[in-house]
Structure formats: structure tokens, C-alpha cells
Image (tube, rainbow, N blue to C red; front, side):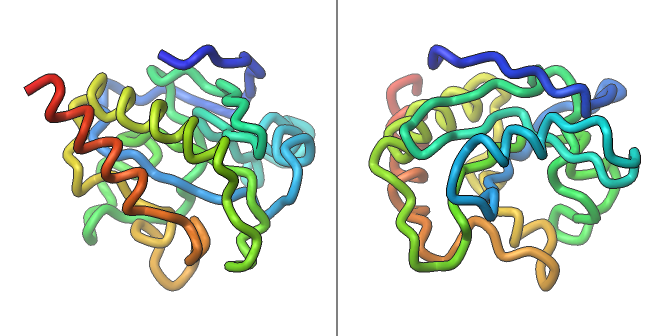
Length: 169
């Protein structure tokens, strides 16, 4: 497992014994990690506006662990998995935020891809997440969300997952 910097968020709840079978990638809509960390760990806002994720990947590749994988992070909002809303996407998923403004121009960094090429396969293998359930926020909230941005290199992350799966087969 990656060495993670723990930066606990109070914004989480019980999974209610729901099995993790989805991984959702997001962009933060920020250029720097500090504002994203504040947002993802803020409990001073009204409960209905609180958000979190399990991990945050900063531009330098630093991975922050915000919510334990055994807990439900609040990253997907109103969403469905191929039309199914029960159990909720939050209850059944791991969420990873990637620091990027989401403008479709600002590149995701090499350091971020290197971190994701390690983190995503580890999570997929640990939870036995089907490859087709490694998704973007846009996939579980179509028409409402667009992350990660169009310039995100999905092929690179999926190739890392496939390599990891072959190595344990």
C-alpha cells in the first residue's frame, strides 16, 4: 500500500455492511491541495453540504487518507450505478479526489498518475472491484457532474489495473 498522509475527515458514516464494489474518481475543481483538504474535512458547514472522500491525490503525488475504507465517505452525492440507486453509490464505493481545476486544459501531473497507478489497483484488488466499476463521477451522476475532466488519461489508469490483475491471476 502507498504510504499515505493521514488527514482525517469527520465527514463519514457507516456503510451498513454494504460491500465495496465501485471506485469513483473525481477532480477537486481546485488548483492546489490545501483548499481541497479544507473542503473535504470541513464540519463547520451544514450537514447537508458536507463532503469527503477516502483519498486525495495532490499535484505532487502526495496521497492523503481522509476516510477509512471501511466507512462511507460522502463524495458521490445524488448518483446511481447503471440506474440502480440502492445501495447508494457512496455506501458501495471508494472515492478518490484528484487535485485539478477540471478545466479540461490543466494537465493532471505525472506524479498524480504515478500515485494513481499504485493506489487504484491496490484498492481494486483489495475489494475485488470489477474493472467496469472503476468510474468517474460523471458516470454515476451523468448530466450533473463532469469529473474527472476530459483530459484525464483513463487508459493509463486502466492499464495499471489490468497489469495488477494479471499479476495475481
